[in-house]
Image (cartoon, rainbow, N blue to C red):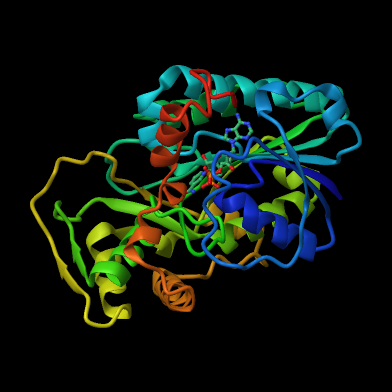
Length: 340
Ligand SMILES: NC(=O)c1ccc[n+]([C@@H]2O[C@H](COP(=O)([O-])OP(=O)(O)OC[C@H]3O[C@@H](n4cnc5c(N)ncnc54)[C@H](O)[C@@H]3O)[C@@H](O)[C@H]2O)c1
C-alpha cells in the first residue's frame, strides 16, 4: 500500500517506517524535524522519502494518491502539553482533524491514529478496556480524546479511522527517547549504576515494546476494513501491566552492579491497569511479546556498543521537553512552534 506517516522522524516513526518498508509498503513521511539532532545509534536499513513540513501546513495535494495515513505527529508527552496547552491543542488536536478531513477529501480510505492509554486517566480498580469510561488528566491526554471523538464523526463508507490506544512505549530506536520510563531507568542504570526512585513505585503502568507497536499498526493497516473500521484498540498485552517498582527491579537485575531503592508515595494518581484482550482476540496472529527484561538487555547491548556516556544520555535531543525548550530559547522555533 502507499502509506503516509506523519511524525516519521520521531521515536516510533523511525522504527515504523523500517517495519512497513520491510513488509513491502511504499512509505512517505512528513515531519517538521524537531528532534533530528537526537540519533543514538546506526540502526536503519531503509531510507523512506521524508517531506519536511509542519502538519498544520499539509495541503490536499500532499495527500493525493495514498491508501492510508498513519498519524503519529504530536507534541508527544504530558510535560510538553502542560507547558504549552495552546500549541498542544493546535498540533495535537486541530491539525490532526484538519489532516483527516483533507485525507478524506483526497480519497484516502484508511486513517490510523496513534492514541494513548493515558486517556483512561486516574486510578481505578480492575482492568480498563475500550468500553471503560475515559478521564484524561492532562492536555496531552485530553487531545487524544478530542481527536478520537472528532475522527468518529468523519467515519463513513469512504473513510475508515482506527484508534490505537498505545500503552507507554519502551525499547530501542535510533531516534531514542530517554523520557519514557523503561528507557530512562535503563539509561540511569547504565550511567549511574543506581536507580533511586523518589516515590514508592506502586502506580501501575501498561507498557509495550516499540516493535510490538509497529507490528500492531501494520496488522491494522493490512486487516480487512470491517475488522478495523471506527474501532478502538488498546495496544499492548495484559501481562504488560507493570508497577514502576517492578520495572526498576527488572532493570536493576539486567544491569550488573545496579542498586535499586524506593521512596515514599508521591500521590501520583495516574495509575491504571489495562486489558488488551480486544486486540488479541481480533488479531490472533499478532503477538505482543517483547518484555521489559528483553528490552533492558537490548538497551544494555546498544549502550555498550556506542559506549554511551552520561552526557549522551542527558543530551537534550533524547528528551522531548528539553529539546523544545532549547529550540525556543535559541530562537530556532517561534511562539507557535514554527521554524524561524
Ligand atoms: N512513545 C509513547 O510512549 C507513546 C505512547 C502512546 C502514544 N504515543 C503517540 O505516538 C505518537 C508518536 O510518539 P513518539 O514517541 O514517536 O513521539 P516523538 O516525539 O518521538 O515523535 C513525534 C514526531 O512528530 C513530529 N512533530 C511534532 N509536531 C509536528 C508538527 N506540527 N508537524 C510535523 N511534525 C511534527 C516531531 O518532529 C517528531 O518527529 C504520538 O502521537 C504519541 O502521542 C506515544
